[in-house]
Image (cartoon, rainbow, N blue to C red; front, side):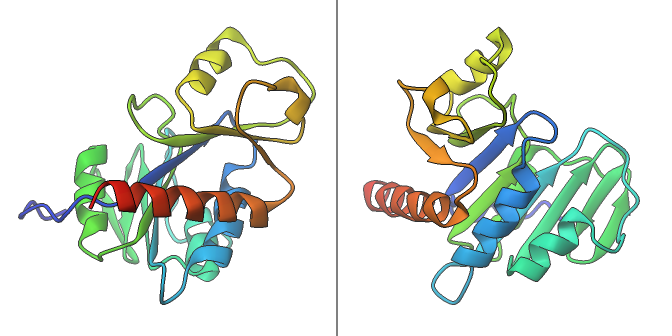
Length: 183
C-alpha cells in the first residue's frame, strides 16, 4: 500500500457486532440502497481470520456487486484491494482510511473494528436476550443499535434489523448532519 500524502478526511461509519449478527448482510443491503452517482461508498472489512482471496460469493464480491466503488479486506494473512491480493500486508486502520479516501468517497463503511475507540458506529444485536456486560460497553460507544428486539434497548436509538431501507435512511440523515457540521 503506497504511503503518499493523506487525502481529506471522509465520513466513516462502523458497522459492528458479534459473529453472525448480520453485519455483512446489512452492509450489502445498505450499499445497494445508497451507492450511486450522488453517494460513492467504499467498504473496508476487517477479519481476524486467514482468508482465501477471490472466492465466489465472498463478502468482498457481495459488496462490489451491491455497488461499492472499492472494497478493502484486511485479513490476518494479507490485504485485498482493487482486485489484488497483497499477502502479508497488514495496514493500520489509518492507512486503510487514507487509501480509501483517494477515491473521494462520500461514505466509508467499516465492517468489524469493534474495539476501535472513537469510531462512530452502529451496533448489531440479534436475538431476544439481554446484552452481556461486554456488549453493554460496545453499545455505550455506539450511535444506535440495529436489532430485531428493540424493546431490549429503550434508552438507545433503535433501528430495525429487518428493514435496511430505514437503516440506510438513518445513515443518510446522519451523514448529511455530519458533513454539514464538519465543512
